[in-house]
Length: 140
Image (cartoon, rainbow, N blue to C red; front, side):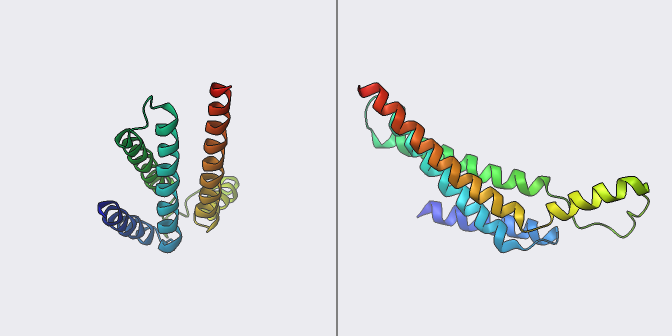
């Protein structure tokens, strides 16, 4: 129950940051939740695979560490995204203008949270597959 409250507060915070940068906040809130959940599930898999005893608290602590890492990654991505360009930023050399405009357009597009969500799910699948292979190799 406490985790739901933390996710709710973090989603509100990342939504505020996205709105301040002129971005659609719902996509970044979804990105935060997906990164939290994939981090938590990956952490639980890793904790279960490497704990000598299947104690629940070790798995839970590694799951929380993974969730915190996922949320931290969401805030890092938000921090790295460019702000809405100010009107006084027109004093740029002309050959640099096209490159800066292209980077700013990509950073402000809906592709960023979408790509992060896809890579998070692929990372979760890779983590699960790697741990299954590791367990098969250790038992045989």
